[in-house]
Structures are given as C-alpha cells and as structure tokens.
Image (cartoon, rainbow, N blue to C red; front, side, top):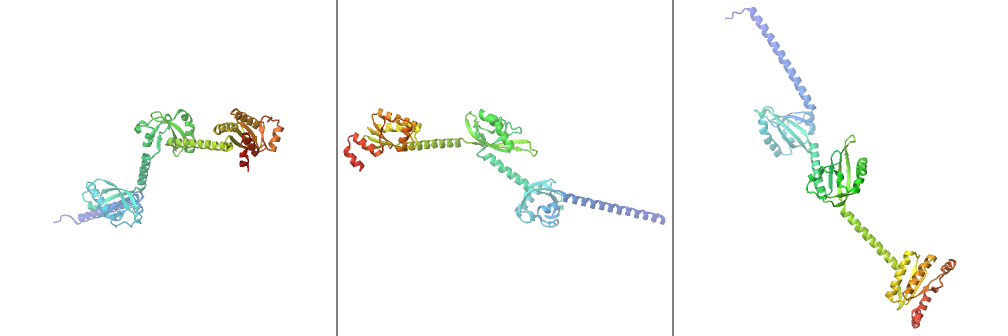
Length: 427
C-alpha cells in the first residue's frame, strides 16, 4: 500500500519531469557539442594538405576534399566506392591488405609507399599511413592518410641520376667546402686522374696544392671570373700524386645561395694531355708541310737544268733577296758538282729589277761558281735591266753577259767544241 500522499506524489512527478528536462537539455547540449566538434573536424580535415579517408568494408565511408582532388574526383564522388578503384591492379590491392593487417590488428600504425591510380588512369606515388579505429574489431574500419609524394619521388629519381652521373662520369668532378679552399667531395674519375687510390686521400686537401706554381699564381683571378660570371672555363697544369705534371681543362661553377652568398664550387676537370699531344703533332706536321712546300718553291724558283754534258742552265724568276741568294748559290754549286758542269748559264730574263743588292748577290754566286772551275755566262739582260745597271753605276765588266738564253747556249756549246750539236739543238 502506498503511504505517500497525493501531494508527495505530485512533488515527485514534478521533480521527475525536471530531471527529464535537464537530461534532455544535457543530451541536446552534448549533441550540439558533438555536431560542432564533427563540423570542426570536417573543416580541419578538409583544410589539411593531405588526403584523409575513413574506410569500412573495403569501401570509402568518408573522404576529405584533398583526397578527392588528389585523385581527380568530385568532393563526394569517392564515397561508397570500393577502395580497390584506386589501385593499379587487384594483386596490388590484396598485397597491401595482407601487409597492413598485422599492424592494424595490433593497434599499430602501418606505413607504406604505394602507386595509386587517378580517375583518368594515370599513376601516382603516395605515402599511406593507416590506423584501425578499434583494433579489436577491424570491421569498424580504419582511418588512412594519403600523401602525394610524386614530387618527392621525382626528386629522389633525379638525385639518383645525378649520383650516377657523378659516379660514372668520365670527367673528374670535385666539390669544394663552404669556404672554397679545400676539397669536400670527388668522384672516382677524379681519384684515378690524379693517381690516388681512394676518395678519402683527397678529401680535405687544399685545392691550390693541385696547381703547379705558374698556374697557382693565376688561380685567384680565374676563380674571381667564375664568381663574377657564375661559370668559367680555363686551362691549367696540375700535379698528380707522384709529382708528375699534366695539362687540364677546368670548368668551374660557383654555387650561391638565394641572397648571393657563396655556398661551394663545383669543378669539372678534363685531362687534356691527349689533346695537347695531338695539337703538338699537328703543329709539327704543319711545320714539316710548310718546310716541304718551301723546299719545293725554292727548287722551282732556282731550278738547275742540265742541257748537255758539261752545260747547265739556272733560270731566275722574281726578286732576289739575301735568303734567296744563298739558296741560289747553294743550288748552283750542288748542280755544278752533280752534273760536272763546265759552263753555267744564269738566265735573268725573269728578274724585273736589278739593284746594287741583286748585283752583289749575282756577283757572289758567279765567283763561287768560278771557284768550282765553271765558266759563268749571264743571259737575258733586258733593256730596263741594262739601263738600271748603267744608272746605278754597277760594274759588271768582269761578268760575261749575253742578250738572251739562245745566244748563251750557242756560246756554251762552241766553247766545249760541240759545233755539230748546235744546228741539231737549235733548229
């Protein structure tokens, strides 16, 4: 039997209603707070620079805007789609699931780099980080963070390429330290070029010690040009480890910070010994060719023509200077000896001017030929040459002169008793 009065029951009812109202208000407030927190989380998740998604039953339960943009989908387009849609193949999707399961089941974070597929079919390298919502019940799903690392992968690939270039380059490459005075890094080609066994032997070595003294004196100016222009090429001579000297071509690049301050220098070094040797050989061959051409020209300009036994003719063409006069004399004396000449005919028809210098040269040549026992006849004296000789007062009284080569040849033949040959030769 209820001993409570109606007033007491009414009071309890009022209190109960108040508690219900308070609970309802508390629930509403909690729901408001939860909704507000959810909205804040959504805003935060949408504002981050990486993709965030909630996966359940191998489907996208929720994705943030960055996740959708990364893979070329509209904001809500991925929701409800199977997660396999982002994988290049079913095999890769299943392989990732098997690898991630042990970590998620233990409540541990799983991280992997994985190729994923955009909506247009292009592939994208991503860094994946996954965490189970409830490790004891993986059916509740997992949260995954998906970061686009395509630029990072490209940078790594570029770095690998540069590393390969540095490692396998045929040129020697050296990098200075931050003060530009010592070697901080070298490639294997540099080590071989300078006759060392290991990279470590060169690390920390003062750069100027590689240069021979004369090249070392020019080094500050060359480095100054590299800093001024950013890039400079010049030749120098360097020491190998054993002290031998070899020529090098240096290509210096000054690497600077954004504010223009110096960071380090990169130097490409090429051993140009073979090139220098080839150039020297080419120069030697060129000189030999020039000398051979000069000899041919000299021989053509001072030919000795044997006419008959005992008679030679030397026709002279062009100007005669001291050097050519010596060639004329030597050639004529060799011809006298070679052909046992008794008579020499010097034909000067081709000499345009006779001055005191030319006369002196001819006089010396004639006297030298006479000392060899040969009779010398000068032919081809033109009117202008005759006038020049007279005007200059040159004494050719001791020289046997005739007006032309034919007359000189006739006299030479008769002097050797070859009258019968004259008609035969001159008809």
